Image (cartoon, rainbow, N blue to C red):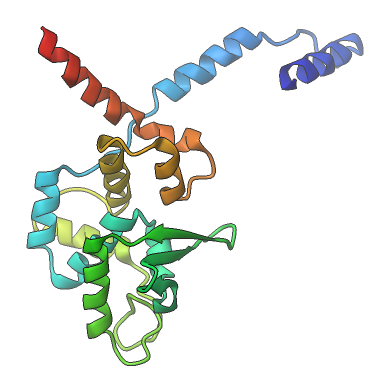
Amino acid sequence: MFKSLHLKLFNYSQSGRFILNRPDYSATLSRIILRNNTRTPPRFYTDEQMKDILTKTRPFVRDFVKVLLHTGFRSGELQRLKWDYVDFKNRIVIVELSKSHKFRAVPINDTLYNHLLYLKRKAKRGQIYVFEGDNSGEPFSDFYHAFTREMKRIGMKGTVHMLRHTFASKLVQLDVNTYAVKELLGHASVQTTQVYAHIRMEDLSRAVSVLN
């Protein structure tokens, strides 16, 4: 429908001498496909790297790393996470989205449940945000640099956003449905989630390699 509409528009424009040549849709489509196929796959941490991160980093960094690994939150979503958004009874955590001002719910697994209980027990009386700055009452706002500094200290490389990729990658490796991964990550379109498809393809490649 859209292609037909565009062709009519170009034909009309061409007849009115607004443009000289009708575009080559096949060439344009080829460029789009090529660009999408050559997009750099997301980087994620291996199990061995995550073991090092969870054992060698300082307690505060380790605390927020565990939350990110089991929710797939963006750092901005973690910054806005309030204790009021953590529903221990129904085992869900509510995510406040930054751009749309909407919310999404992420289930709390056993590991995250126990970790959030631990964080709640050591939180200050009346603490609003799950992670707050020192004696400020305001949300901690620099997960990026806090994580980067710790990674440098323990002799590793990587960014805090790679934890989100690690969350998604593990789900894909465990055969979780792409649409379920999309909902958990809060992607607007499943096409965005498809960037993790290469991980599944690597698994399939290893599977057929046994036939060599």
